[in-house]
Image 1 (cartoon, rainbow over the protein chains, first blue to last red):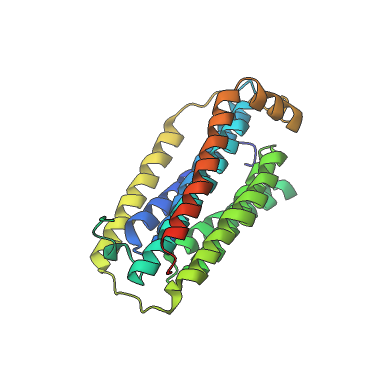
Image 2 (cartoon, rainbow over the protein chains, first blue to last red):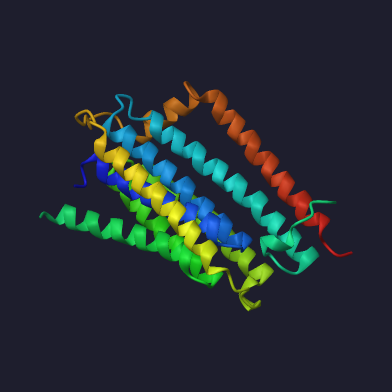
Length: 103
Length: 165
């Protein structure tokens, strides 16, 4: 089972579904960021699984995952500093509070 | 069932349990801790898939940097001490229906696709990854470094902006 492509694809689609549920159901900005990390992780798991089982060049998928992780780090930095800014202005990080996007 | 399969099942269970707890628990701090559990499971799955480099990167970068940054943001913005706004259960049910439909659809696609036979031998090593990064994917590599620089500067500017003088 640990050497079949399908089991990894099932795990990754379960991670993706959990992330989408968190995106739709939660109202806390940090929880939304956590769901986003889950979705990105399901994508990287898919890349590595396809890289192992279907691709002749075994480095291409791994390089892609390195890029995904770097972009996730950039996105988390910007997202967290925006959350802190919003908390200082509104004293809440509920996304219902962030309705107006004026300066 | 061999030991490897048992360990694989355990790791998959840990990953999925961490993912479910990370989106369902009410306390955001527990969400972040469950995210760390899930990321650790994904790192173990990377080892099963033969890429030890990515497993190490996942632990160092995701758990060591991103998850810890999320924990810092939770402590600085103190969402734990605010009272929870009651959510409309119908909306939660709708979100659950959408994600369940997504999972069922993906699972059906995965089941019905005839995957070709696996060919798992090849060079997974760190040297090959480094060579690929500096030859074939040099331009995206540089672009990502630029994006990281812009993100650092942007985060500094944003957090200096809200500082009360």
